[in-house]
Image (cartoon, rainbow, N blue to C red; front, side, top):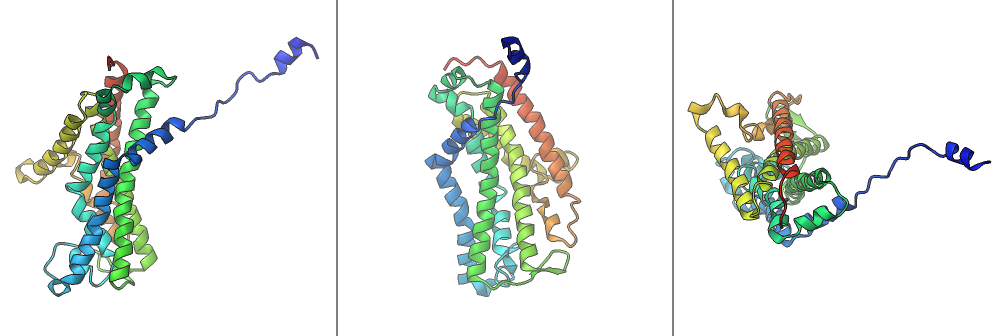
Length: 286
């Protein structure tokens, strides 16, 4: 075979394997940081505290908020009560810390410039930062759900679970519904993480990005609670967070939660695009 034939027989293109090294490095950074580990530990402690408190004060059953009254009857309600408790404040704070630190933290430490000198595009770096934040969002909700289910089944009886629609479902089916709720809340928090990522590209101070992201979430919840602003409520990023009640009906309706999914995806698309538009042309001097 001649050299020309060898060249002709050579493949004209080859698929370059996708490297996950950057993502693995970012995940190691996010989940290995002591601050983020403490946040996850605090979130995991919430269902434990709720379960212990209800166990000690079981005589007060019937006077608590939604989901709390049913804990003594079925331990799986510990997960629901914990998720209900952390969603307004603790979960958004956790997401704000991680997403607000994504770009601003690197810029503040002077490492962003060095990250951009390696053969990695800005788009890939931004996507990796956001992917790590999203995985942290899902990890936070799943930890609360799993710990809540575990401690609830240890301290309280288990069996069929009474749903909001009045019917009962088996224990495995109830566990599946809790998983769906965790995934739904994880997606909702991913939308907030997209907002935090965008804010993180606007400043070199991570604390400012964290505070702005958390403050925006709180402001959205306050506006959502004002009856006179009901017209704009469905457009707020926090309005559909508590629509996970759809997963506790038989059959699962998805009436409000489907709108919540669409709302989260729209927020993700808008603010990741804004983050890319800002980061692509950002002058990185430190």
